Length: 295
Image 1 (tube, rainbow, N blue to C red):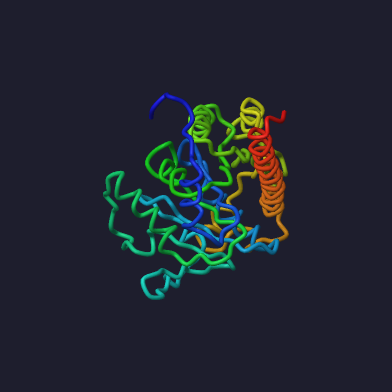
Image 2: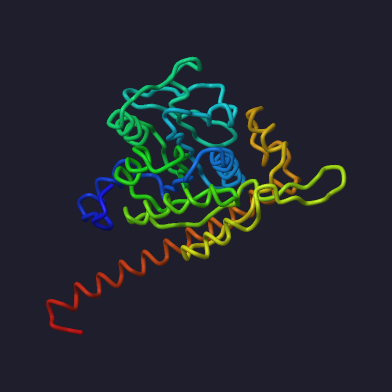
């Protein structure tokens, strides 16, 4: 990637981006600096938690090489078709699209960057998302083609970064955060997954992957810490069964944690949106004053 600084988007480019998904209010990327931190699990449970809160939600699986969302969401019915457009699948009240619907389970996707970019663009352009409050994008780990494509193709409201507390994960998280800063994507916050483990027999808490690393990273980058998700076999079991935990165990402490993160995310988006509107108003006033020689 170039080190020349943040990219700029002119008004024409911004309008073209918005035209791809005209009915979607907020597009949220869910990212991680490295694999194995449970990013897709967090994305799936956040999507369902937002839907339970009364929001209209879509979930795009942008991990072209390893699409897990259809299995984790239990989406057994594939997308439909309307003319030359795709009708997204629906699971648990969430609209879903994924390469997993179009590639057999025993077939690997072996594509170069331009083909990944084209596929992601089609997921926006050719899918009938309709009116949505939130479209969550489950990105692959790292800072590669998919991340750049998403930031270039649509106007992102911002990015949520998922990490575990350990230093090796946080080292890669910093790289991912810096990449999104370079392309002017707002940082919505950090979610610390697998934060701690509570023994089901004795109730003792163990910080298996260290502790509070996500909160420290959020403080370092001046971004909100959205919350902690504990490490629990039930979360994995629910994902494997195709019923995210917020549905499978609605009264559990783990579900409460996911719902708290969803609530914090909604509040953060309101803050970002309000700030953006304020900046737009300031720009309008400035443009009005300058031709008149006003200060």
